[in-house]
Image (cartoon, rainbow, N blue to C red; front, top):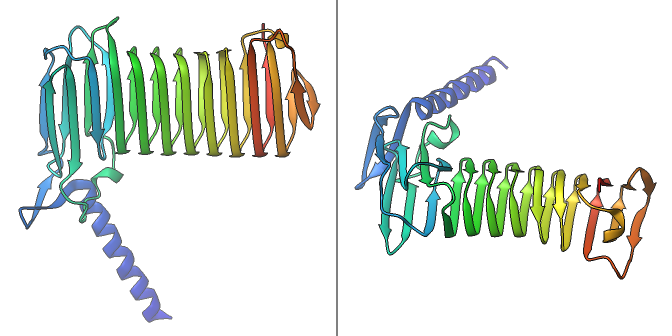
Length: 292
């Protein structure tokens, strides 16, 4: 028993040492050699006056991505030496690609969020396309206007505020998605594990797919609105009249409540209605409330 305890303590000490190294140091392979550097000895870049662009493409690993409004087109980043950053601004497209030099003993992505990429776009300027992808990190977009917007995280949270797009796609494998004061002609959300929270959202059509998580949406939902979930609750506060929406709501295990009336399912058809709501859950409860 004593020998087993000693082994466990030794393993715990080794794990603690490894994670401590990951916290303070970047340990990576470069040119076939093992290199070690302090996280504080990272790379910093900033240019607040770059040529105007119509398209934005950011692909990062272990970094937070921010897109905000600013006086001029520009971007900045802070990256530890365990990462490489390449960028170009040509033919109206700003492309930023950041990756880890090696995942070997590089635990920087697990600790803190000191690394970031920040892009600024003048207020009122409409981009043709914006695509933001990050393997481990958060995405924060504020005040962006774009014909198309795509955000995708493997592990991290996504926050969109005051953002407009004709086509808005948001996806996450593990993390929460929050939308506030956003408008999309067409919205598509795909969330494997995490919650969806939308406040003052305007859509003319949306398709939301959840595997495990809850969805709380409040706003004006026109056109066809479809929500499906395997496990989780869905709450929908609709800025509109109940008679203006055809409804098809069902759950396999759970309940459906529409304006306080609880049923096993809800189906309503009105030829004059211009909008539809389709909600289908495997396990969970649905609550729909009309405020118009």
